[in-house]
Length: 230
Image (cartoon, rainbow, N blue to C red; front, top):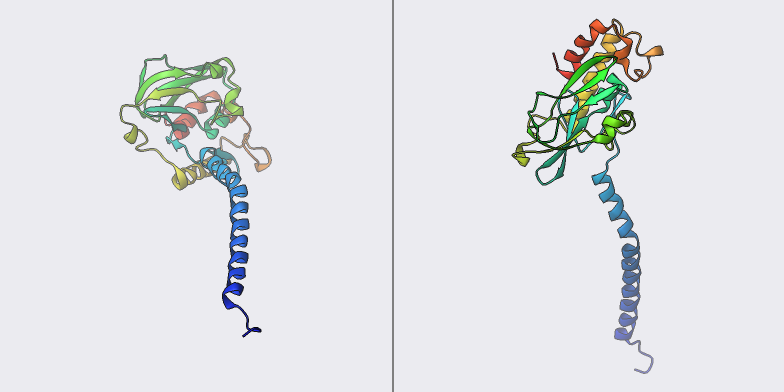
């Protein structure tokens, strides 16, 4: 029996090896997982803008009114609203932005603010119902912020909504919003052969403020077509 192998001692060594291997794996997971978790959270909170038709970008976590304004949940019953990339490219840098006063009530689908472009006022529709809590004075003082950051620093209003769960009813998000924006791109392409032929040189991306390239009598047509205003 002196030459016999102690099977229990051999198994014990194997268990120790396996245990040590598992400890190494756990250590690597602890080391790497915080970075992965932080990256994933960052992507959810600030997703990369989606591009529609290689022209206009959309924030994927926002909600969009078909008049090209957006709404985003802020805190509790507060919603932040602004204009999308299509609208800011359509209008370009406005001469002035006329926002409602704090305390004003806005209605989904009704005129809520106006842009002044070459002496004409172009109104836009609110995406939600609510009471205006604050306005972005930085945008009224520096309208170029709209072009630089339409979904972040270029927000227009913060609104307290009466029913947070119903605030985004009738708005578009996700795949629906991308499909809708792509349809807007197609409408611009179709118009290119007519009145808008001058706004996309060489078939490229529309020039910023392409409404200014049109005769003033066509502005109302464009506002009705894309901003849904009279």
